[in-house]
Length: 235
Image (cartoon, rainbow, N blue to C red; front, top):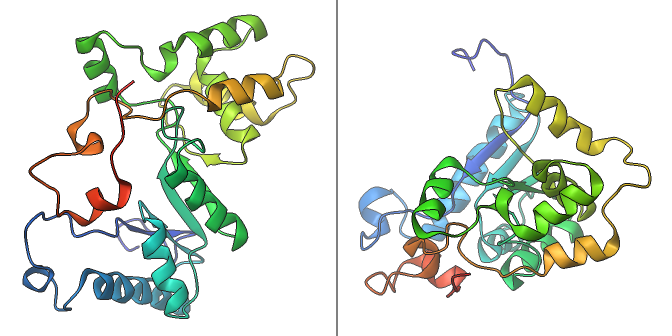
């Protein structure tokens, strides 16, 4: 806070709920014996900052359903926000993502999706294997052409229609204005229910079509996060 020149933050997120050190015993990198215990200690620390008025709200990022349920079992204040990856190929059609959103909706936790438009590293990978990026998906481009909107606007409007908060990033003022326009009135030229359904029905897979982290590494079968998300397929 001192570095930011602030007295408090509006929102503080505990990022990741996994150790991220495959094969390493939790006790070697944490004073607590289990990953679950580490998560609970971290979360209680976040709540402590809120109690001290250093942040107005606390949330989590990239936490799985079982980890959120641990907080319920511990009878602690639940996160105000869950931030997780959400886009055309990791959407509510995925049982894992649907379960996360249902959990959040039932407990008044804001479900927020990041990377709604893709990222530069995905773009490079997709180009190398000849598959379309999120902004190049034929269905997205077809809807955008029909409505006179950009592919980015269509993707963000789709998020809004699903009740998913999102976080597009840009340093271009024109893109910033375009992103904000997704919340305005689109009059008759709006996504139809059929559009939303068609976009939501696209294959659920790795966003970079071949990412070994998402699709599973046969040498990493014991990793907690890998077991949590289960296998996915390429598009």
